[in-house]
Image (tube, rainbow, N blue to C red; front, top):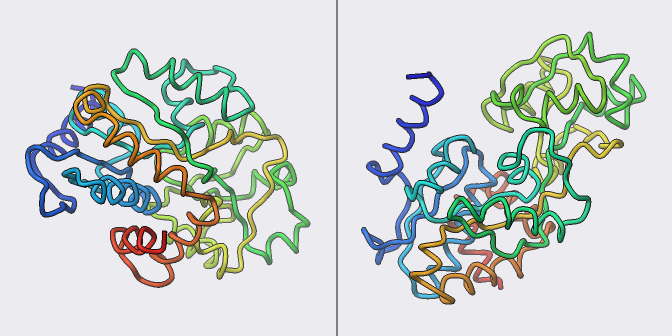
Length: 297
């Protein structure tokens, strides 16, 4: 069995058997199963949508950090999980044939995602206004010393630089391959970063020169780092979008879709930044931050 497939199978077993996430008191075998990707913001988003559904009176369970998109989306398609909070552009890149050009506008992207998900037994609900793209950061000292404000500015420097990003970055079109193809960036070294916090620490310690951080990362408010402008528009629109299995929508109907749509309708980019800050800077858990956000609503 190929190594990647083996990892997927192991992760799918964990999803079905371990119950590693948090459950509402009413949750059980009948619960609507939410699953997150293996980074903190997505865990917050999943808790946010799960709490909206929970407050609508439906049973919910949540599994966190099960794996990357290569694990979780197949789990959704196979019925191992029921709901995923995804990002519009990245979901499209993952589901469409390699090299497919994406539309520029979110509305057209959503239509294309509907078509892509139709044969997979999955429904893409209405995207939120909240948007979070891949961002590439340097320290403010580096930006000042080298006069770098855009990703294009890195081109003559890249052979001597170390890029730090998640382990899957070398295989992701919007990460290392995109930086190479769109910007001509040939980094001297790639270093895998397990978390965004580790990425910031490595930047400040001089262990890496450029690091991937989401554009809504709470650390951008407090750390001496600068996001470089994506001047050639490598990153597509990345509105948050819930993906739900067809049969789950069929079973729970408007009670489920209305709760998810209401969550999306209330969620803005500023709100997502504040949620990240509540967890990263204030020490709340994703579930606590989600509950607080709903109380504020």
